Each structure stands twice: as C-alpha cells, then as structure tokens.
Image (cartoon, rainbow, N blue to C red; front, side):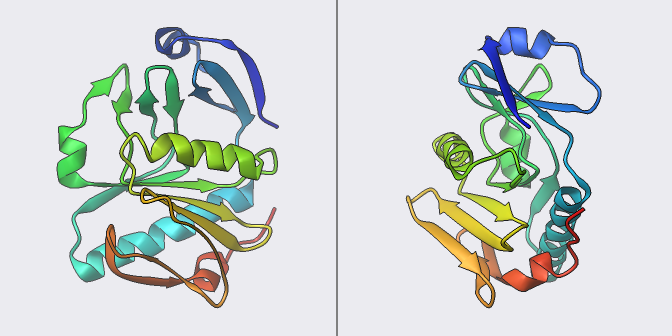
Length: 187
C-alpha cells in the first residue's frame, strides 16, 4: 500500500538511502512509498514491452523502452513509470540530474497497483503530459482495461475487443486489448 510522508525537496529525495522492497516517487514534494509490485504487475509490464518492441522492429521505428526509470517532471516531482518509451533523439537531448532524466518520456505506462486509485492515476497523467509526454496509459489488470490519456486532453477507456492505437507516437500500431492481457496471471 502506498503511503505519503513529509514534504521533501528534490535534493532531499535524491539523498534518501535505498530501501529494499520499496519503490518511491516524489509527488510535488510529497514522498510516496510503495511495496514492490506483485507478479501479475511485472508480467503485464513485460508483455506490453515485448509487444511494443516487436512493433518497433516491424515498423523500423526509432525508440527505446525502459522500466522504472526516474523522470523529474517538475522541481519537486519525480515519477518512475512502470514502462516508458522515448524516441532516441529525444532521449539523447534530455539532461540527467542526479540519476534521473529531466522531462517526461514520450509514453508513460502505469500498471495499476491495488493501492492506487483512479484519482492517483489521473494525477500522474496530469504530471507527465504537461512535462512533455504524448500519452499516458494506465493498465488495469483486474478489469483488463486501459485508460489512455493524451496530451490533447482526450481520455479513453479501452476494453476488448477494442485495439490500442497511438498514431502520433506509434504509427501503424493497432494492438488488441486482449493480446496485452492474454498471458497475465494475477498472482
């Protein structure tokens, strides 16, 4: 379960010692602590990563994918999406401050944990998008649905048999929702 603690600056956040089995983010100065994800969370992240990498290779697109990478979205906001996609030229232009990238990925993907609410995910999208993200996807493994937030303000809930499309970012992508969750076992 995520917990919030006292207000910190970016520098204080970066000086915190690592804690085993604890993930952390900084939300406008508020330290957010969360337990490491469960198996289904990680499996969903990797399944989507594999599908996106296959699409990249098939279409000859120039982007890289990473997991749990820290992004400084604002002076005292650091988020680490479960999965992110960044075009290579954009990544090369990004500054690094104390081990985190300054700015947002082109695509941030959050696999929703039991401790997160729809409000939490909407807030994260509201931080990624103004910082430069083109899209934010929130994957709900329990309902096998996706909330796709776009920089233009469009928010869509997608379920099977719909397909996930992101034409501005991933030309040619038409990924059936059921394919993303096909191998996910909630454990």
